[in-house]
Length: 115
View 1: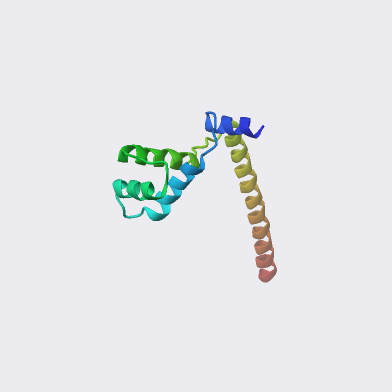
View 2 (view 1 turned 135 degrees about the vertical axis):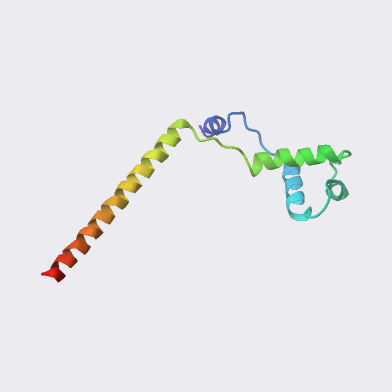
């Protein structure tokens, strides 16, 4: 059921992210600031058996894993939009009732002062 819901939200089949890809994401996000893609790739190659020879492939691998992990692109279904709209309407109605109640109290106090 979880996989089905995930597939509906993402609009595609999901796959497990490899530890290597997660390490690549971690390296670029934490240690790669201020470095060129070539320098990042060389840093990666120093510490990992999975070697990259092409800077473009390395940066593409990063963008792909970043997209899947940090920006998965979930889409709100029409049913969810309707539920959000209904929640917003109920919230507004509750706030209006609270304001009306407070106004009544203020009016009653003003009437009491004027009498």
